[in-house]
Image (cartoon, rainbow, N blue to C red; front, side, top):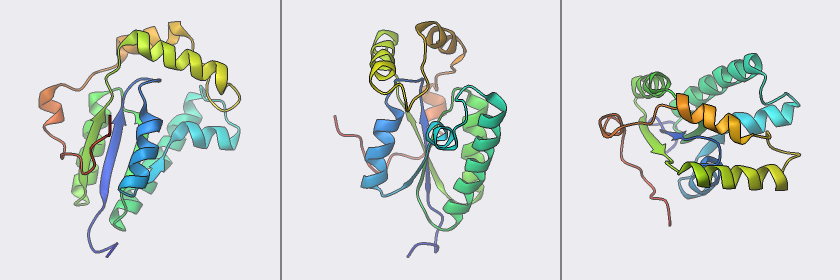
Length: 164
């Protein structure tokens, strides 16, 4: 019965083009779970994807919403990218304090493949996604903190494995 135990939080970690949304949609059906994707919310509100203050405020609200859903026994997927170890630690500890299991799904994709996917997305879905330049991905890749095996060991094992 939902509500009798906290749900499961799934953090999707990776750069743009790594497959976070594709995986999140798959997991949302399989688990089931509620997907919270800031890019989709910003687009729905008509807010520029690159407006940092709005994104930060929205992500804060989505985090709080996720905690409320976890307390109600729901599974929640956050598609924030989670580029920094400190952010991943913060969410893991907060969800664990609620008694929730926490997964980290790291999507490690080579740069050339990231750019191929983003370039395709820029072309095919320009009206619904943030346009991203190759320069931007190169800069973001420099600041992205990839989780190592020690960090990954701090998270729970996935309930549902990704198909090929």
